[in-house]
Amino acid sequence: MKDADYRVKLYPDGKYRWIYEVNLLRNPTVLFDVYKVLGMSIVILVVIALLIGLFSGDLSLSLLKGLGVGLLAATGVMLVLGALGYVFYALITGKKYIVLFTLDEHELVHKQMPATMKKARLIGELAILAGAVAGRPGVAGAGMLAASRDSLTSTLSDVKQVVPRRWMNTIKVNETLFKNRAYVCDEDFDFVLQFLREHCPNLKK
Image 1 (spheres, rainbow, N blue to C red):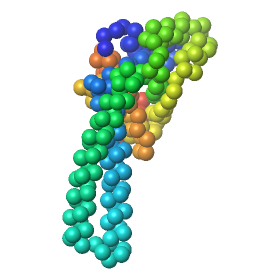
Image 2 (cartoon, one colour):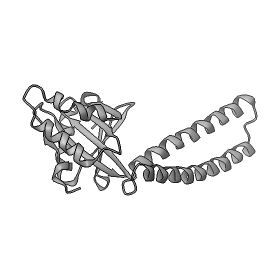
Image 3 (cartoon, rainbow, N blue to C red):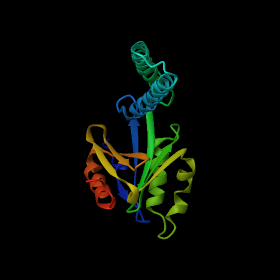
Image 4 (tube, one colour):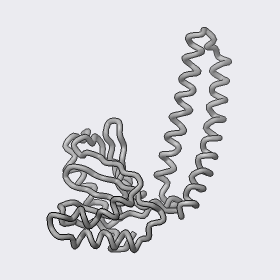
């Protein structure tokens, strides 16, 4: 993404903000999330079936073979339906996922913006925020924040892993039981990665 309006910028309230527009058909990170959820569901069902067989005394080689066949079939169906559902979702949302990021030394906030929100409006509201009177920057950006649909906040002191995926312009920001991510353009990728590493005191070595 080469548009200068999408670059990471420091705002009057001391926070860095940037917009990233994810092309859902080119960046598969959301699809990977779908597969993870579906995969976990299948694993849970298999474990339950094994426990039932174990405690009922019916656990046998034939049962294991049946579970194996069922697991393979379920995996195949999951891959196909997951991909079809993902493509359908991408098409109805205009093939894009728009995110507003806010970063300071304490937290990373990931806000999903409505797909119908125009690029010009997003950039315009950030421009207003940039020119806000010192001490009241939040007022100027109220319209943008109110328009956001979903929000994920990572407290940097709780983050255990910062994992870069440069080829997907993605930085994973993982706590013990909570996962987040930042999408960053090529030009600012190293800056955001280094900032996170410097302000997450409890990263696993």
